Amino acid sequence: MERYCVIMAGGIGSRFWPLSKDNMPKQFLDILGTGKSFIRATFERFLPLVPASNFIVVTNAAYKHLVLEHLPELTDDQVLCEPMRRNTAPCIAYATWHILARCPEASIAVTPADHLVTNECEFQRVIVNGLDFVETNRNALMTIGIRPSRPETGYGYIEVDRESADIIPVKNFKEKPDLETAKRFVADGRYFWNSGIFLWSSDAIMGAFRTYLPDMAALFDQGKADFGTPREQEFISTHFERCENISIDYGVMERSQSRFTVCADFGWSDIGTWGSLYTHAAHDETGNAVSGHAVTVDTTGSVINIEPGCQAIVQGLDNCLVALRDGSLLVCRLADEQQIKHWVERL
Image 1 (cartoon, rainbow, N blue to C red):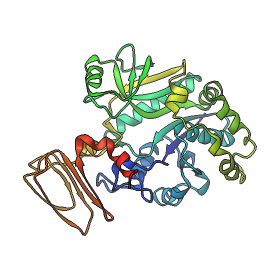
Image 2: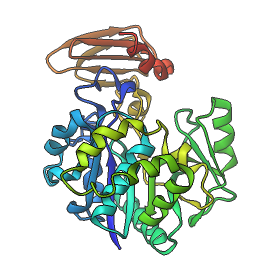
Image 3: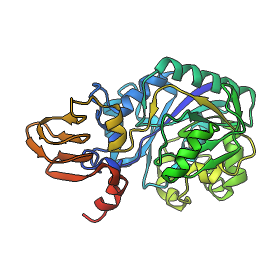
């Protein structure tokens, strides 16, 4: 059974505005200053486990050139282009039918393009064990759970019956909680962050689509003869918009009776917000995370991100965010950062 890696790279990352915008979304940025974009780091993290020829990137058509620029090891036909955004279930279905045209029996790791992992050796150990599990348990759908380090309201949670280092069944998926509920989850010890990383065999995910999203499966079945041929993109361009806009969590994982997780700890963050960036960034003596040429005065616990070539003086702020990029300025309280994507819609 061949192993594949599907990288989902079509999002905008609007919560990271103004750094992440339509023309240069978060997955192609080096927000942490590591010298690598998020998508490059994701590719290199999986490369010891999956040959470069077995990577599939699903992205928006507008970003295909960026994918190939950041991942020059890939060929043109390894980048699948969605004509519009339709959430993670259609994205994963598209990649699954494409892979099956290439390899009738495959095990597949699915990952977002824009996460941080600080302990890559432990990450790779967890992924290898998980792939071994789904290759043996051919009906299993597996998601990676992360041991929570704090009560986090920005993540969904996975509930299990008991904490274990082994692969165990999932009891329930929980939506993003309020702060009090998140505190209860962390204190309980049986709740783990949902990383959005999935492992399964092609048989298992295909069967799940046919059972839980039969209309979507039937739609992709119509193009079965086109996948893996020059006609594939034409089929997708014509039919993809008919897919239901639904996540793989809602559409499949929450309905499945064969779902598993492992409670992992490999220094994971989705770096989905400025607050999560603050957690992982270096701080000065007053607790500020400063990037760029900025002077802070009577300012504490804040994120200051100023684009190269510009200067800023920030005075009198506590636990705030100041970000300047490409003529766009954001100033807000870090506690209100979940509203950024809604504010951007008003521009």
